[in-house]
Image 1 (cartoon, helix red, strand yellow):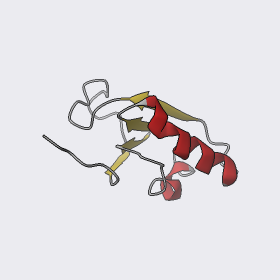
Image 2 (tube, helix red, strand yellow; image 1 turned 180 degrees about the vertical axis):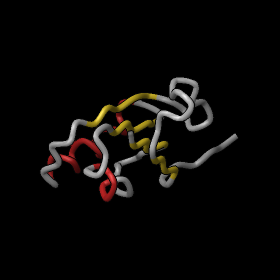
Image 3 (cartoon, helix red, strand yellow; image 1 turned 30 degrees about the horizontal axis):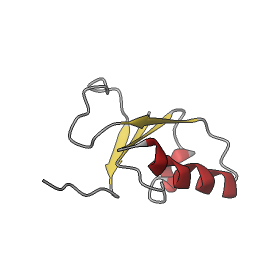
Length: 79
């Protein structure tokens, strides 16, 4: 499984999406996924990708050891 934390429009992860059977992209809200979904359509990516709302600080929904690869590229933390 490939995990993209703070996926934004998903540009950084496109290199990896097709190399894994399952891809999960995490982002702060549903609206952020619109760009990632559109990019996937434009590039003809038919890989099933699951999008889930999650903060970058809380990955409690991800089982330890379940991801073969993860990236944290397009995110920013503010306090």
